[in-house]
Amino acid sequence: MNIKMVSKETNVSADTIRYYERIGLIPPVKRNENGVRDFDDEDLRWIAFSRCMRDAGMPIEALIEYLQLFRIGDSTIQARVDLLREQRNDLQDRIDVMQHALDRLNFKIENYQSHMVAAEKKLKPFE
Image (cartoon, rainbow, N blue to C red; front, top):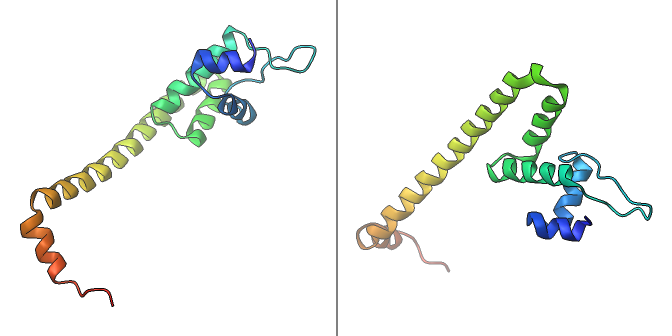
């Protein structure tokens, strides 16, 4: 398959696929006699795996580290699990920050007249 077909099949842009290959999220793709990438099922599995990890919130840098551990082999299974846990904790921290911001914004909306109007009246107008 060429990159256009793979992009359609995986719903991942051709630019993203090239980027994934360049930074090592997917192995180098074989090329035909004209130098055009020729994707096979294994390549599709790698693209799907990388997208799945990204969709789970895994940053590129962490995914690169994860794949480096994967390439070493089974002796790194615990390190990979630890990395996933670390990423989960980071994601939970970001969710908590966003939830706090959402709670504050909801409070401001629900109490606009008593809270926001009163606070705005204490501000000096722009000159």
